[in-house]
Length: 386
Length: 148
Image (cartoon, rainbow over all chains, first blue to last red; front, side):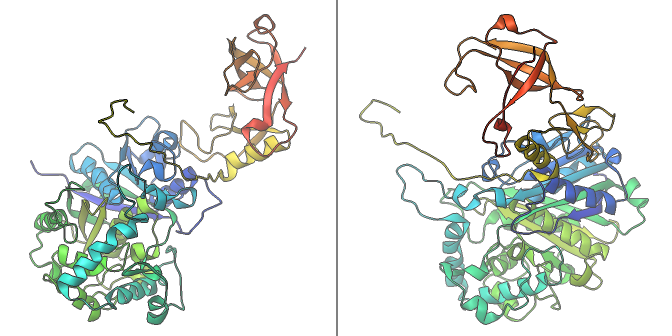
């Protein structure tokens, strides 16, 4: 059965920063949501359903925050869905919202994702002591560092690739007023000289801890056709999952990510992603994940992702810009980080990305991953109606 | 935990700190308690809600009009606690009660220190008993007592 068309007609986000001491968790979510509604030229009463996502509840210790956020999300008398898929949740939340429109159930769906890291201890929440097991890592970096080492060994990538990614993303962030990190003095050497946290991941190659939220209004074809602004048509959505501890999987270049990409490209009619995709926002919390995901998502041949970084292909002025907004490396409100990737590519194909706009971006890919590199969510958006 | 010597057991204690940002509405309410002032907020239908909420429960609109309520109030309904437990707010018998402060249109769950259930009645008047050391917490309002 064919799906109904769905488009992004409104995008909103907060200024991401270490501590939003001026707003409650509800106020933070609300800020992004009201901006998305304003962009969509809608009010709360126009919305048919709300889909909210965030990373694990125990990060902030507010269990099932969707209960307490129902009024802040304007959900009274409407369906309210909560989504959780760890770090990929921002992406999968947007996909659930899109599917409610694709299924013909709703015309206008508000989707929101957030994290208030200043109220939480995400690093220690991710490092719980497990009885009878040695404490192997502290925080996500400790978990992912061996994956990066493995990638470097397989691909013979030189040590400085991660530094180049971090430098690019932080310079891109200077063009994005919503980005958390604005470091005008950052340089190759300042990144190289920053503290080694989880070898080979340096401090400056690591995402920050941010308070922030992102929201989008997704609309049916009939509603999107009436929009006075450019809209981003959703051309494909896909998700894949893997079991965390299975010895049969490759967490460095996971099959789930590869299959997710192949699925979403097929839906969007993309046969040569390197040529047909104008720009990408991918989930890069530690610098080295850019070359790894370039390969996993079929943009680069196996073992050559790092060469794209070195050759400047993924720069804002390269021919496959990646993380134009500054990416997760420059803002990481965890639950929102995946949705920010999805929302940023919507802004790109709408021509509304401001100083980090890729000229004439027509087709763009948003990507998020989560858990132990085990949950993947992606979408392709385009300026042209499918 | 198992007493079977063949089964290993170990404690799993997970703890790390959390903090909360209260925002402009709940923050004002808690700051008010420190100053012995009870604040509610005007809803979209004109009713005064206490404690104040940031957003209207019916329309989802922002609520901003804080209103001072009390200091006296009325008991809407109540339940007597004959045998307080260790974590109860009072160590002697007391009432849990929905107290509607004067000027508010809704009640909120509070403690009434009335001595005996015979001293409790729906519709009775109560007044707040403030804590001596107040720090901007709900516990600044220690309890209520009969206003006779």
